[in-house]
Image (cartoon, rainbow, N blue to C red; front, side):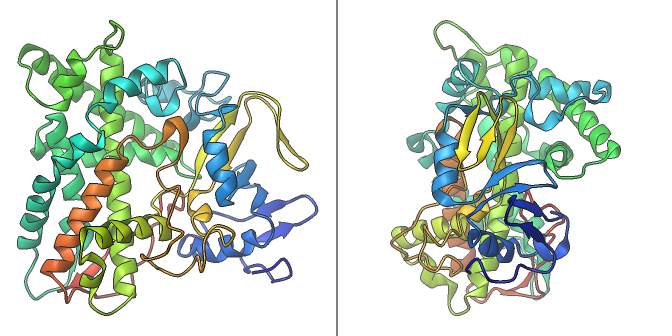
Length: 418
């Protein structure tokens, strides 16, 4: 689209001030944000989004560059993590804030470096690759359990149980706790959505308290009887003579459990939707290891599960002509928009696993690049290959709709029949 193309009816844009008025909870937007993205790319991809109160960047090169720019970070210079907002009474969020205060996602070096180094050992590619047979076996078990000759929701039947089972097994947390862990995770992640309510905050705080209490009890057991699981490894691991404190252990474990399934569930659902929309034999996308990997990369680019990642400025920075931010001000990096940038991709709105310009920023970049990216890629490769190999006639039973959660871009349900 060019600059003279009329905008979608649900948004307004002042070209002189680059201010965007767009409600992220507008159904026409969150059901298909790519229409707005395409128009905004025609306006230069940089704008002040009034709903969030900060400058946003949607160009691929800008997003990739700013994710790596150390003049920005996740840790608020005022000491308030990203999800907390500012100036409001936080007494009802004591448990949630305690976990966020020790989350490596919300911290910067040197604390971030120490935490990530300790945790990263279990997520390097060579370690994760050992899980491939288990992921394939579990995928087959889940397919075996699908209802026969009836319509069913693929998300709770396949997309959700697979990653929560794998990350639970890795950590050594009881797999039967899976449904409870999911409930706690959903309540906590809701804190990051636009327009949250006091009720949302209180549910998140309660979930954080219960999640933390459960883990503290389980950590105590693991200290007495260590195993070969990740939690035992984290308890014993040291970096320069320093171990994780119990608070850091709790925060790190909750982050790994939440991140270890939340985005993967959304990405799996989005991927199945995209592949089925292509028609024909889905098996053609998974004929070899190379085509399988390329298909997963295109799914990550084409319909990412996370659409905004925010960062704080640490100094006065002119980040675009006429756009200056001051210390403590936030910027929004639009991952889903960057992945559809026509300046970076040929036919960006076309699903093409064989594209030569294959890349994406769905896992971020820089020091906060998703620590679980190798695991997420392996899970998606194995699970989707098994799914479409076992069920080549899988089809949609109804048009899927996205949840009212633009930030975390995922489906409400995925009703299918095989």
